[in-house]
Image (tube, rainbow, N blue to C red):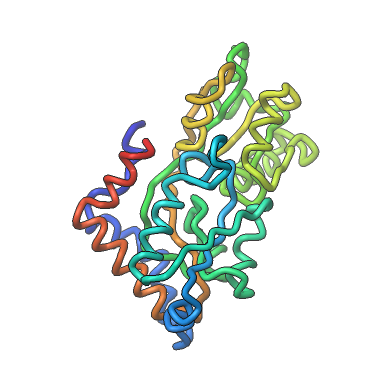
Length: 266
């Protein structure tokens, strides 16, 4: 399972996987936001905390930290501007924030999907993940997706975990829509499980691992192999910014700097 929590080491693999996102570049306009970001002197990045180790609030400093925050800092440094990270309480609002220009980009452990690519353009991938089923440690009756029949599930609304539950449990009649407890903030979905108001939590596997490592009384019982790839979401009109970010990610991957960031948080 460890390879699911590591950045992709071979840049050639990244390029192949990136076809899902980069194939849309030919359709975007020619407007660039690089100059406006530099003139503003600030890179505005949207995220949604409670999603460790990608973004979460440091209990001591109350500042956001994580792999995505470090990566955002790298992008801001490369642009020679300051970083302004905006923490959205609703993950599902992030795509809209890029489309409407509230933020320059989204770094939020966001998986590249065809549906999302209709609204935004993603960078080349920088991380690979799956989904995981998390339960309280005293539960012995749930060990696979089939055991979720008739159970109550918490999810982070608008995430691929939410979509998986809808497609594989609700649509198949294993559970009802009312059995799915949806939360805009990932940590609230965890709290629902810890507080014994649901039977299981379905969430991205690296985040599940971080939750289990930092919260007593919960465990991962099953990893759902979904082969997801995280990307940085940007406005489709930001052609130069998309290319700038892709070039930077490629350089970081080739130099080993990306793996250093991953090793820091995993």
